[in-house]
Amino acid sequence: MANFKTVALIPAAGMGKRMGASINKQYLQLNGMPIVARTISVFENSPLIDAIYLVIPADEIPYCDAYVVKACGFKKVVTIVPGGKERQNSVLNGLNAMRGAVADDDVVLIHDGVRPMVTETMLSESIEVASSRDGALVAVPVKDTIKSVHDGIAVNTPPREHLWQAQTPQTFRFGIIHAAHLAAEADGFIGTDDASLLERVGKEICIIQGDYRNIKITTPEDLLLAEAFLSLIDKKQPGETKEDSDNILFHDMKNPMTAAVGSIDIIREGRLGPVNEEQVEYLQSAIDSCNEVVSMIDNLLDIRRFETNNMRLTIRHENLSEIIRKITEQFAGTAKYVGIELSLNLGASIPDIAVDRRAFVRILGNLLGNSLKFTPKGGEIVISCEYLKNDDANRRRIPLYLKVPKAFSDSPAFVRITVRDTGNGIPSQDCELIFDRYAQSKNASGREGGGSGLGLAYCRWAVESFKGLIWAESQEGAGSEIVIQLPV
Image (cartoon, rainbow, N blue to C red; front, side):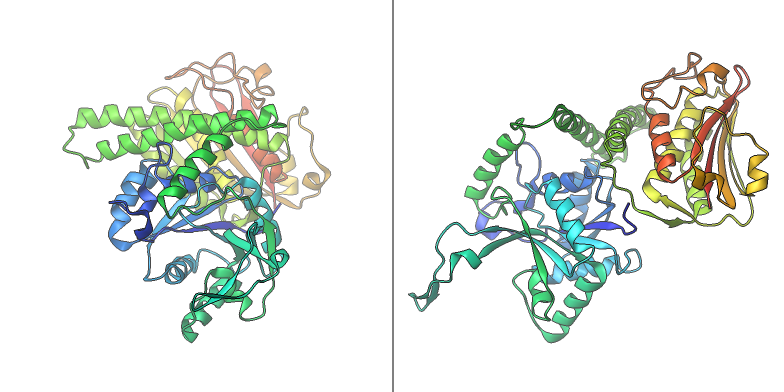
C-alpha cells in the first residue's frame, strides 16, 4: 500500500479558438456529456486518485462548478482554481493551490481537460514510475516521417525511432514539479509541456507507452474522432473479463445517478427559481435516494477491488478524533430531522492511527447511516472513541469467530471506536454473518426497512486493511453496537 497521496491536476483554461465553436471546447458535448466532465470522470472513478484540482478561466468558475462539478456529482474535486494567461501559468496556479494540502512526496498527475480517453492503465503505470523517479510521461511513437523545416525548406529528417508524441498525464512528485515551475517562472522560460521544465534542469523523465486514441480535442475533426473512439472503448473488447464488463456497467449506472443528484441540487438551492419548503423537502428526499444508490455502487465496486487485491489505499497516520468529530457534525442535521439523538464521546489522548482517510470516513458513514436507518424516532445513537492499552483491551472479549492476526495481538495499545444505537438489535446468531456481502439481519426492520447488505461488508474489508478488527455486539430488541479496534 502506498504511503503517499495521489492528486490529479486538470487544466482546462484554454479558449479553443481552433474549434470554431460558440462556447469553449471543454464544454462541448461528447456523447451526451461535456468533454471536460468525461475527462474528470476517469479520475473521479479511479481508486488510484485521492483528489482532483480543476483549473478553469476565472469568469467560468461559477458555470463549471454548477453545470459540471455539481451536475455530475464529482466528489473528488476539492477546488476550482482560476487559470492563467498560458497553460504553464494555469498549471502553476493549480500547484500553488495544493501547497499545505499536498506533501512533496505526493504524486501529481497533470492531465489535459480535453483529453478524455485516458485509461486506468496509464494512470497506474504513471503513478508507479513517478513515485520513485523524476517523472513519467505518457507518449506514443510517431508513425509518420517528421521533417525539420526552416523558411519553408525541409532541412533535416530526424530518425523516427527516436521520436515520440507526448500526451498526458505527465506525472511527478509534487516537490519536484512545483520547484521546476517556480524556477521556470523566475527565469521567464515557457516550455512546450510540463516535462520540458524538468528536462531543462537535467531530470530524467521516463516514457510510459500511451494509446493513439488518447487524443487532445482541439478541432472539429478531433471531436468526431473522439466520438468514434469512445464508441469502440465502450464496447466489450476481446479477452475482457466478466468482472471488467461488470465494472463498466456499474460506472455507467453511477454516472447518470450522480448527474441527477447535481441537477436536483441546483433546483433545490433555488438557482433556477424560487422553491418553497415543501418542494425543498421532496427534492432533498430525491437526492438522498440517489445518493443511497451511488453509495451501494461504490461499496460494491470497492469490495470487488478488495477481493481481487486491486484496492489502492493511501495509509498514513491520521487524527481520528478530528475525523470522527467532523463526521458526527455532518450527520447531526439528519439525526435531528428524523428525531434521533446523536452524541459523541471522545476519550482523552487518542493517538494518530495509520488508516486511509477516505476509507475511514466511508466506514463511519456506513455505520452511522445504518444506525439512522434502523433506530426509531426518539432513539439514540452514540459514537465513542477511546485509547486502550493491551491489557485493558483484552478485558473486552473479541468474538471467537474472528481470526486475530499475531501483529494485532502483539500491539501494545489500541484505539477502539464504537457506534451504539437503540434500534431493534440484531439476533445473536446474525452478528457473525452481517459483515458478509449481501447479508442482512433477519431483524432488519427499521424506519426505512433493510439495505443492500454491502455497507458492512465494505467496512470489514477496509478495517482489516488497517490491520484491525470489526464486530457486532447485540441482542434482539436491545439495540446494537458495532466495535472497531485498531492497533496503535
